[in-house]
Length: 168
Image 1 (tube, helix red, strand yellow):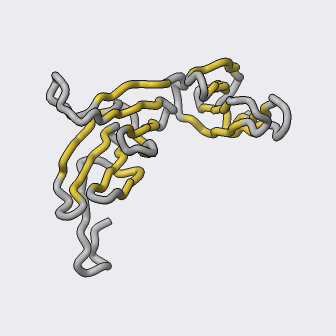
Image 2 (cartoon, helix red, strand yellow):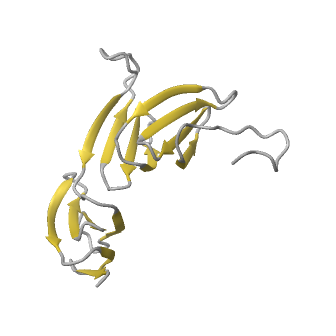
Image 3 (spheres, one colour):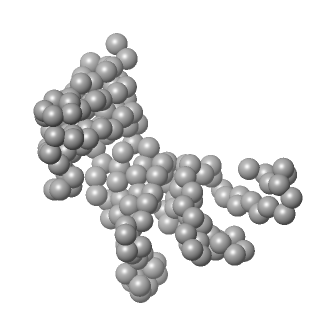
């Protein structure tokens, strides 16, 4: 956005394309193509923090209920947890970044979860794989390698079954 159409508007211009924006009380947080999360002051749009999370594009992020942790997902399905312990770490940062999951070698093309009571989610990717995740244990519990890139997945509403679609 350039701000030309709205007089008096302020525009945040970062070094990379922004994919997602989070507005909170005093900050604007951007998720960027270059793998960075950037924090700007809401009042004057000054850059307060630049967190280098990954070499992959950040597609989404969200705070936990107590606002002390930020969950982050990349374009290839890697998941990170950024914790803000309230003190500066030994490396000089005010945060700790931990990788939680990363299994697809390509882009994640779909996500669905079971409504039948199992704590499982399913992802498909353009790397020809379908992965089944247990969100209680926070890890992969299964998967398949298919013949072509996968485009979609749908979980059965009452049974532990998954239907997948591919490009072929």
